[in-house]
Image (cartoon, rainbow, N blue to C red; front, top):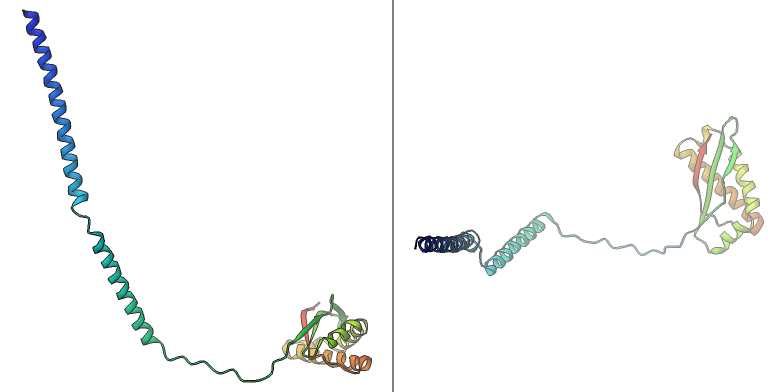
Length: 191
């Protein structure tokens, strides 16, 4: 009998432990669900309310931007383009550079030269076919200038003008027509 009483106490003790664990587990789940609802469930706004708030904010921003543009802008009017003929400009660059001594100086001038025209391709064909003669003319014109003559933008413009005149004169002599409108420097080094 004593053994039966001990077994009965053991079985009651084990049963009580199981009931306590089950009740405490259920209580933890209920407390967790309650806390989750309190934190997350009650504070979420309705999605349609969020969309309406976003739309209202965007409309207010658009109105503010429109009034700012209206206040800051004047009526813009385009200028009319004058009616005049524009001609295509054709360019040719002499290969390599030209190097020559400057008159009355120990310094050397090294330049890259290109020419342009607004006439047809015939001018550039003439320039290419008489390149050797034109190179000689260019070197001759370059050697006529001194160091002081080519200083600054005015000196370079005078040199370009003299080169244009020399090239056109040589083309007139060879082809009875010059046609070079401008001489351009692609490089300009004074050593």
